[in-house]
Image (cartoon, rainbow, N blue to C red; front, side):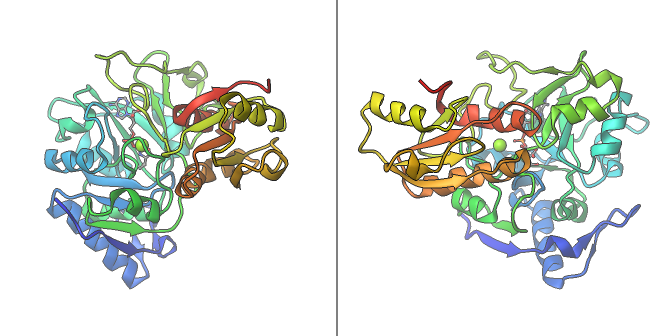
Length: 377
Ligand code: TXA
Ligand code: MG
């Protein structure tokens, strides 16, 4: 199906969830109307819509309807064995729609949910026998992943449709995740009817996915909440959290993105540099050894690399990703897309240490990278 994709403006600042209320108070009439259009689409059709969350833009469809979930996989061109995260607008909605009547959420999650929800944390829960969740959401696994986003537009969309929403990032499969409505439009124009445009995403990388049902608990995907924070606030059981392994076998279930497939990549290959001091020797050696002096390069710097003009004249575009983990997370996908659009042949990126936000940043970068250069010579 082909759509005349419409971008609907919404203002997150005019949407407020008052404590104890399931439905938001919306003070801007245009925002309310546009949210209602998108909510009706989700409720009444099997089409999917783009919408902002605090992490990245999501591509949402009813998590209860096979046809909607198929529409998600189709629009993104995503392999169907990669399970999707379900988004709810409140813990009450999670209980009402997706859990058995007297079910108690495992206590291992209590402290994390109290402190991190709403927010960029996704947890695994068991799929129960009579669950109304589409089996296509979980790719047949016996657990489902769920999160309660803090972005007012995301929460309002889910609350107004009163439907749990399955939503991967709203990019074409393999591309960097979108942090602006224009990124969604670039990738999915004609494939979806609506994109809610609520400005830029504050976190910039996807949610952290944890599995508290396995012993010890496992980090399936680093993201918006750091491993250090989870250990610090999760309670004693989370101190021994282990990292999921990076590669899945051919017949193995996908529990962490990029295990089997290319991910987060712009069109131009990304070359990732680690521990390469100011970058000058490493980049010039890289260019010389491969005899690619005629190519056009882009450079994304973080903490130590010197400005492009001091490194090589062939670097035609340059961006500062930032110096703090928060800034680098927020800018990474956006700047990869920006320099890619300039038509460069290669994108050089300066890596960071894998601490705090650095673990999620390096997780995305190492999956995006065509090649990694570990030190200067
Ligand atoms: O920040 C985010 O989480 C974004 C925004 C839109 O909310 N969403 C997102 O969703 O990244 P998605 O569906 O692309 O995340 C899928 C990942 C899988 O690759 C896997 O790591 C984990 O979530 N996952 C989902 N269901 C799972 C399951 N049943 N068991 C294990 N891991 C699961
Ligand atoms: Mg994604």
